[in-house]
Every structure is written in C-alpha cells, then in structure tokens.
Length: 253
Image 1 (cartoon, one colour):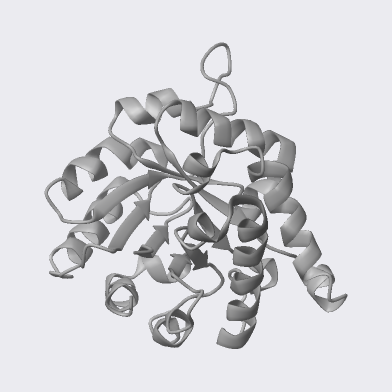
Image 2 (cartoon, one colour):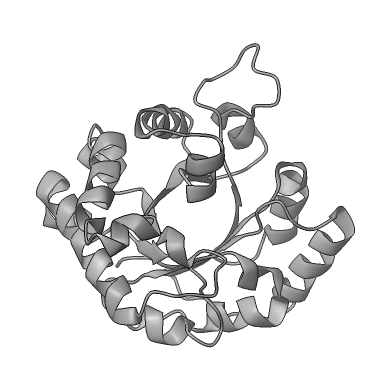
C-alpha cells in the first residue's frame, strides 16, 4: 500500500528554543497514524539529532535532513554527507528543492550524485521537481518535470526507485499564497506516475508516493489529498504552526 505522507520543511527558520517548542506542540497530539501514514520533519542541520531523539518511540514519525553533499567525505567545508546523516539516525533527505536549484544552482546531474550518495548509505531521498511560472505559462510543464526525473532518477534500479519519495512543487506556488488547484496537482502527479511507469513499470510506480508542495495549508490539505495521485504534502510555511500542521497530518487519507 502506497505511503501517505505529511512532510514538514522548516527551511532556515526557528531558533533552538522555538524549534523545540514547535516540535513539542505537534508531538503532544496523538495523530494515530496508520501503518501507511508518515509524518516527517525536515529540520535545520544543528537540530537533527535532538529532534530525532524527540520522535523516537512515536509511531511512523521521522526526521529528515534538508540536503546532503554529493560527495562522501573530504575537504568540503560546510557540507554534510549522507554518511554523517546516517550516523546520527536520519533516514530521509530532501534533494533538489527548488530553492537549492535556484540559489545554489543545483543541476539535475549534481542531484544524480546526491541520490547515489543517499542510496550508498541507506537514506531515502525526497526528490523535488517542479516548474517555474514561465514554463507553466508556456504549457511546457510536463516536459520540464519529465526531464528533471529522467536526468536524475532514471539510472536507478527498480528496487531503488521503489524506495524514493517524489515531491512535486510548482515553483510559482511556493510561498506566494498561490496554490495549484487540486485538479492541476492531480494532473501533474498523474503525469509523473506515468513517466515513472514508463521506466520502472506499473508495480513500482504505484509504490512511489508523490507529494504536493506548494502553499499546502490546513484549509486545502484535505481537498488536495483526496486526489488519487496526491499522496500527501511537502509543507513549508504552514509546518511552522503546530495547529496548522496537525490539521494537515489529520487530513492524510
């Protein structure tokens, strides 16, 4: 059964005290997650170990890193490797978020290496893809996203592909308050699944969760998640509010 996931991306927000307060406020709610439901929190690097310890014993609840290096180790000041993340108990890593693609010029080829490092060390990539407004307005979004998937993921084996999580983020809807309609989200998610089916087969493609990431809020989560190919959300701003994110978790089908 395909996983349904509420993934929080805290980005570069929250002090140590406020991060602890937020996590405590979320975790005090008993979400009664089913076996196919996950809550994942992508927190700033300095908080990874402490937040991991907070969620130990909480069913189906995990901590993720927001990035990892494309190399295993060495003289790379400021980088954090997949091996280091694994050593502190982390199981998930966001890769290719649109902000890193834009601000750090991360290419599809670089992301291939990051994906490889994750699998070398037993980490599960949450692989982000999505189009900017100019591509959406030219109606070229399907081809744009397809290239992202093919250039970064199509070297994987079927066994590896079955483990990944995809997060579709229409860049024009991130932090803007704009949200793709549930119909637009479903259309793209169905396209992503068809691309994955073409390469890895229907059985594998049907196992891969495809999350929506673009101004998901408590007020629209249930409608978005009701679509057959929308398997949850990668949530930015709304994940910084305990009540909002608890409602998003509750909205998982």
